[in-house]
Image (cartoon, rainbow, N blue to C red; front, top):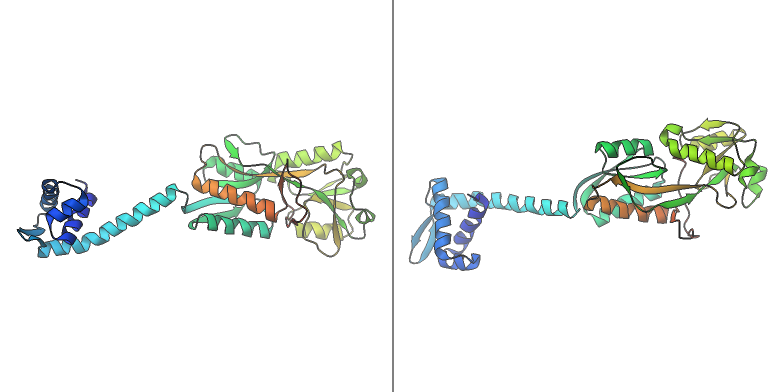
Length: 316
C-alpha cells in the first residue's frame, strides 16, 4: 500500500466531510475512494469515519490520525521539494576548488554569482593546486574546479579556455621599469621566481620552454609561494624577476607587460567527464564571469578588455 497516497485521500475526505465531494475533488470514482479509506482503516486497525447520509465525520481515532498525518505529509512535501531543487541544481553542496591566490575580487565574485544563480545551494570552496584538483576530481572528492593548463589528466571535461597574459615584476628603480614593455631577451642574466614545479608540472615546464624560445634562460630558479614573498625577494636586491599576471600595485615594485605577449596562463573550469550536473554548470558559468570581469582574463578570440584591471596574485 502506498501509505502517503492513502493519507492524502484520507485528508481530503476529512476536509470535505463527504465521500462524494472528496471523490470529485480527487477525480476518483466514489467506490474506489471508499475502498482506499477502508484499506487504510484495516492497515491502522481503527475506524476513521462515521459514515451516514449526511456525510463522513471523523471518529476520535480519525482525529488523532489526521493530526499526525499532517506532519507526515508536510515532511514528504518538503522532501519532494528538496529533491526537485537538487535535480535542478538549486540545492545541495557543491565541492569546488580554485588555485591559490586567484585574487580576492575574483573569488568573492565567484561565490556571489554562484549564490545568486543557485540560492538554495552551498559552495564548499577550497584552495588547491592544479595537481591536487585533478587528483581529487578523479577520486570523486571534488565536483568542480578552476585549473591552469596544460592540465594533463584523463577523464576530465573543461569549460571555455581563458587567457591571462604575463608580464614581468621588477624593482621600481630597475632600468627596465622605465620601458612601457619589456622584451624577454632583456631579462638575460636574471634569475626567475616561480612556484614549486609540483603545483603544476606541465605549466612550469611550458613556461621555461617558452622563455627559452623567446631568448630568456634564467640563471637560476627561485621557488616561491605567494606574491608577497616574491615582492620581498625582488625588493631585497636579488637579481631576480617574476613572470606573473598584472598584480595590484605596491610601492617598491613595478609590473610591465612583455613585448608581443609571448607568455600567458590558460585557465578553465574542470569537472569529471559525465558529471556535469546542474550545480556544476552553475559553477562553471559563475566562474567564467568572475574570471573575465575580476581577473582580467579573456577568450583567445577576444581582445583583452582595457577597462578591467586584473587583481590576480602569483600562483600556478
